[in-house]
Structures are given as C-alpha cells and as structure tokens.
Image (cartoon, rainbow, N blue to C red; front, side, top):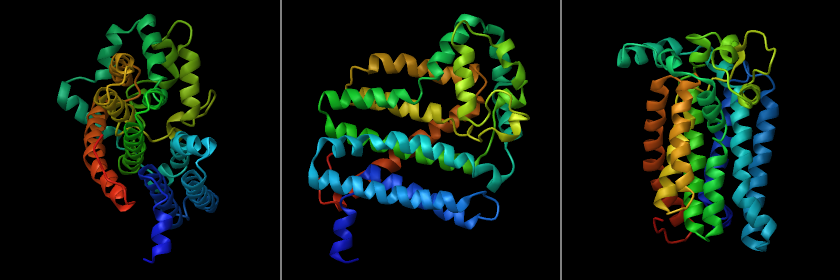
Length: 314
C-alpha cells in the first residue's frame, strides 16, 4: 500500500475503523443475499455514503480542528448505533428465516428447572414494573452519560477508549443476532397481547413499552407481531453493553458510577422480569462482554500504533 493510502487511513480513529468495517460487512452481506433482502441496493448505497461521510468527518477534524468537526467526530457514533440496529432489522429474518427460541427455553429450564420469566411473575407488582420499565428504557443513555462525564473532566483517552469499546461491543452483539436469531419469552412463553394486563405499571410503563415495541418493528396494532419483531434477543445487548459501561465508569473513576452501577444492575434484572430476555441471553451478554473487552484492547492498541501514536492503556 502506497504512502498516500496509508496517510488517508491514519485519519481514522479506532472507532471510525469499527464503524467503517461494520458498514463494509453489511454491504457485502446485502450483496451476497440480495435475492432475499428487499431494497438491498439502497442499503449498500447508504452504507457506502456513510463510509465516505465518516472519512470526511475524520479528515476535517484532523486538519481544521474546528469545534463542530471535533464534536461531530466524537458523537456521530450514537447515530451509527441506532441506524445500524434498524438496518439489521431488515436483514436477519430474510437471511436466517428461523429462530432458536426453543433451544434457549430448554437451556433456561435445564439450569433452573423452571422458566424464570414465569417465576418472576409471582413477585410482579405495578410499582416494581414501573421502576424497571423506566430503568430498561435508559439503556441507550447510559454510555452517553458516562461519555459526557469523561469529556467534562477532560479524560480524553478514557473517552476514546470507552467509545471504541461501546461501538465495538454493539457491532459484536449485532453479529450475534445474525448467528442466534430469537424473539424472546414475551412471545413464546407468554401472550404478547396480554403484557399490559399481566405487567401493568403506574404512569409511564405502557408509553415506554409502546416506544420500545415501535423501535423493534411492532407498533401498536401490528398483526402477528412475533413474525415481524426484531430478532435481537441473544446475546442480551442490554446486559453486554451495560456491564461494559459500568466497568469503565469504575475503571476511569467517573462520578457517574454511583448512578450507573445501581441503575445497571436493575436494568439487567429488568430484561428478564419484563420478559424481553431469557436468562441464558444474559449469560450470552456476559460472554460477549468478555469477548469485546479482550479482543477490543488488542484491536485498539494495534490501530493506535498503526496511526503512529503511542498506545498507553487508559
């Protein structure tokens, strides 16, 4: 590779590398499975455009040093996570066309001798449901809260490292959805249409539940929701990413840890209580968490060294 190409690559941070790699892999997948993915060419165009925009943002950040480009370079990843999550919604089921829920249910029963979501129904009450539904809905905000605190205290390397791990972790969880498609116990062990009756809240539960359902492709009134809901159960990304966030909140001595730790623990518990996940999904989330942290450190270090910077583990 000539020096010009190498120089162009060096504009990219480790986070940029993960995002661009993800869009490239998604585009290749669209092309390979174009016969079953509706509008595959539109997604390929969007992904290639996103790659170009990311490189431009990295270039302008490096050369102009203007606050707009600096902040855009730090925070575009939030939009990346949300848009990528929705893109794979249109890919997983057409490509895989099956779910592994029966297998996950059997694993849960083998471990406990009962179904955890059914057992937790015995302690359900509206106040607990309200609390846990609110906590569950904070999932995407927790990494942002940590990131803002790290920037506020000018812990730049800690922010860059944490941002990389968060984005890389999301990418791995998305791969997990392709490998292990599943829809969760609210559709298999319970009647989805009865959720509001069986797990009522107080004020916000139904509203927040409707927002989450819509984000997963099943707005109110959807016929046969189990057939169209996003296949995003295994691993539990809520568990994986929440633990990663808690780990770096503690590691980097962020004051947000006093908020993130209790909220994170409740959030992980809520995934089963609210019937979004099987217990084994949480174990999958822990496994993917370790995979993220162990392999992510090597990738981050290698790319930082490639860019000509000295890597110092934050």
